[in-house]
Each structure stands twice: as structure tokens, then as C-alpha cells.
Length: 81
Image 1 (tube, rainbow, N blue to C red):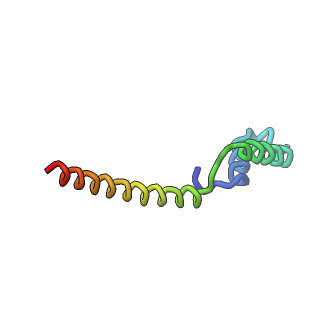
Image 2: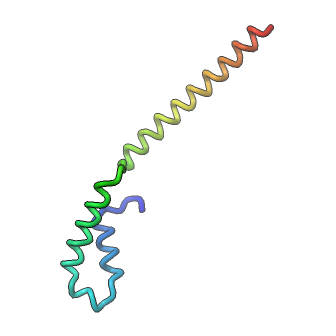
């Protein structure tokens, strides 16, 4: 669902309505948007940009941790002599 906006989701929901209900399109559309905004607003979501930034931070942190583990193992090896 990457890249979808609330309007895109509302439009897809409207397109899935049976033809007999499409006459009520404006009512459904505003109700769909309100429900989506209300529901999604209560969820603890992050933007794609925030997610990508945190992924990069995690990758750097993981690399540093691996380097520190290797350094610690080397120091332990030297001390064990």
C-alpha cells in the first residue's frame, strides 16, 4: 500500500461499490475519508521518510556494534595469551 493517500484509498473503496450505490457517491466519499482519517489518525504510524531514516540509523548502529564486537574479541584474544 506504499504511496497511497487517504484520497486514493477512498477512491478505491468507491470503485468497489455496486453500481446501484454509486448514486450516493458524495455521501460515501466523505464518510470514507472521515473514517479513514479518524482510524489512521489513532494509529501510531510513521512516514516512509521517517522509516527510511531510522533504517539507516539502525544499519549504522549495527555496523558499529559488529565492529566493537570484533575489536572486543581481538582484545580478549590478546589478553588470553
